[in-house]
Image 1 (cartoon, one colour):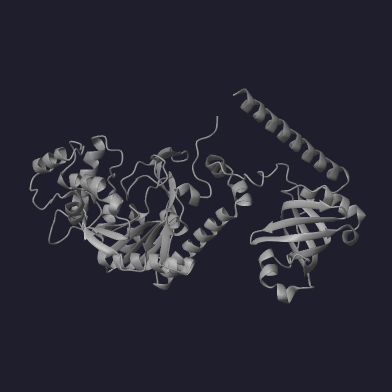
Image 2 (image 1 turned 135 degrees about the horizontal axis):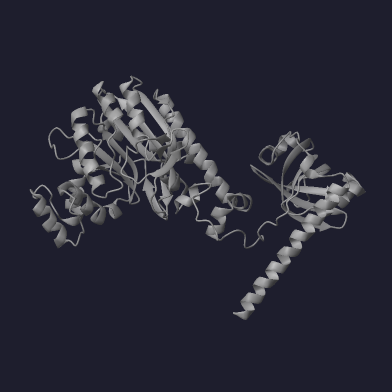
Length: 498
């Protein structure tokens, strides 16, 4: 143990010395009238990607680029550096005779991590590496902190999430994930825009937390002296727009749920919700399947992806099976044969499934599904026809009034999307809300609240409508083979360090 403590002390001493030296270099620059932080602009003519991909056309020409110095190695009167910008890296060949003695002396004092602008000739070294023979060099910003050591890098997950800015600098694969995330969201928008959907924005703060079964965050509006909820869903405001005649609307936005954190959950996450008049949950199934398939194809060039070593085929038609059928298949329990709540509770006890006194038959069916079925849904599967007890905003099935026209899409054992034929009967909707209010009064903090304005909107008549919500973060996880939601959020929620 003593040896480990000494090692830590040596590292801290080394770091302290590095920080001191870098600050001394900055002070020297400032003292010489060369404060890099005073530079406000630097004109670029090219980038690393352009140089490497179009070398044949650019060979011998003069380019100006800027980026971060990622490595530096000196050989007397010649210094080699790697400079990195958003698109990649390229080598700099800096010769004392080309830049002058004074400039070269400054370059020799550069640190890895400094940001610089350079102009020079595009050429290939005798080893065949595309490079820039530097003619002019400008220090644009001084890095006072050292980057993680080359061979060990920034590998501690906790530190990577806390210092994402460093993670992006030293781990190129991380930047690739977030570039793909941006492309995924862009393709979702493109797909929906091409279907004549209208992108809208709805409130983040509201006096009602509705549209999902989730515990909300509470804040306070000082001017109104009123507690407000940070939204847990986008649903109820978007459906008001369907009532208003907008017919096809969507929103991609942050929602907030005051719940636990895991590899699948973050208190704030990105949700896509869309609503389309004159269709039902079958129309939403087709749309959801086509949207995911098209997005994968556009971003990855294929609809067959690998996640955690498992090949997921998004090209084939997604399986469709009812919740009852799935429970019968994997738990060997047929809820069509279970007629009463007492029978449902008895079969739950036989299977060691814990339930609450407030749980009805449909709730118990869902508990069976969660225990026996979810883990088996690896390939894309629509689980259809949820019990009415767990679907307060979905339209009842005409043929089975205890069930609703609802589906959830599961891939790799995780829910990726949730959709309904939307309940547009204001009388039935009020009854559903009243049931939720009872549950909330009984201590269920995730139960919905009564939303009188939403009920009023339904009384103005909402057309038959299909709606769908898709977890954007989980889709990004799937398409980038990322094991944790924190890997696809630039700044995941973290507990402060003490």
